[in-house]
Length: 243
Image: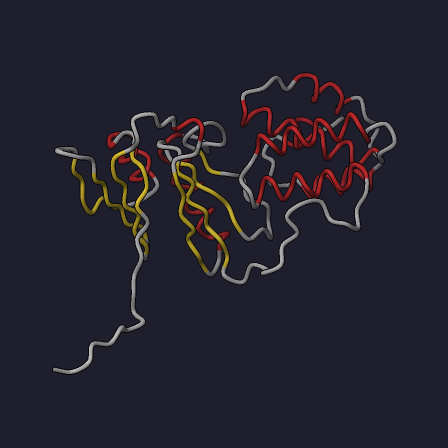
């Protein structure tokens, strides 16, 4: 009998929580996923496939609250992350008539040139799509070369794009404006306020105070161009900015 050999050809399939088979099937099939297996009794099991990867889901803990977004997660490594975001956004528009930006389920915004985005499904799982050539050394926090509100903005970017923590980003920006807003350049204040407006829509918070403050700013042409360039992925940006 020959010696048994472990061959390096493994495949791993993530297994996450499913709070509602009906809601999960509805969401994922709307995005173009194929249901490859569906079982509701004696226990929940759901298998889905899209392109070349699979997602599997099993029973959810009894105390699971999808709104807390603590259910589980999966990393999907891809060559061109922007193409995946475009595909899912297009599917949402066709199925729902809009892009699901807030609550659960949703898709996070994609900033041109970014290397990742997240799908949050109806059970609170986070499916994170990451570009394979993403830098291996990421600054998980405000850059040491930045100070004041500029550093807060950089930290908020990391929280939103890499840590998928909109709530903490919102807290950081509110605190940063209180501490550094008075002495910060007007363009940095405008960037912070635009982020807070976007986050207010996602988190279901009042947006009027941020909108009033933003429209009271006097943006020079160069400052406005910077805001429009950096935040071009915010669909409502032109409606927010001062006339």
